[in-house]
Image (cartoon, rainbow over all chains, first blue to last red; front, side, top):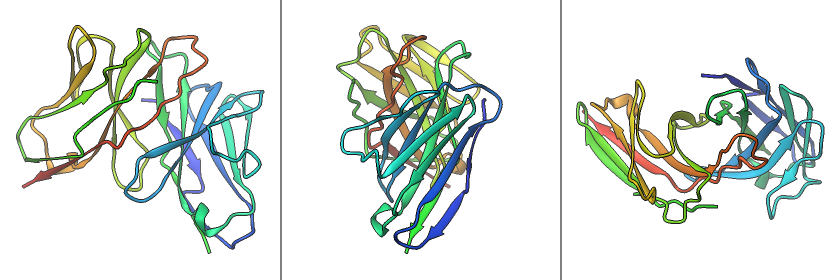
Length: 117
Length: 114
């Protein structure tokens, strides 16, 4: 299947700093990518839809100024956690939508573990 | 968006067939049914997708009755490495749809014992 990568795989930062996470579709173009957050022993929670060339669409309760999303190209979306705090510590996962597939399928990245001290 | 209901956990032994059923009573006409597998600290991995009847690939089968209000993921002859959380999702996956958002339920923790 298609491959989606994330960078970094894990990051530790101090409270108050900003952290950028990259999501790349390696062998297909993705006009739409999605960002999820997952706390331990919990399910994935959809945070926002990242649209190439336009503003992201955020789910209810997700602060757009806190989680900045940029989708500058057909293969790259970035999520920036601004002024991170310990409660932002989580597992962040992106997915990319392969529109060229016979059936629409989303492929997920390996995730980024964020720890805010 | 259709809500799904799955068993929270299931146990099996190596070599057995495992069937995980998912209920989605409010599934819409455009919705596909997709199953993902997730190991700890990894992103979900696509297993299988279907719209109706039966779909089979190299790792699983998906059975969907005519009313589409439920679906069953069948894993033949499971091994220890199949221990994971399995998510059933329904969503508007029609080509050209501007949606495509997937909302994960709690999933089913499958534990395979030796």
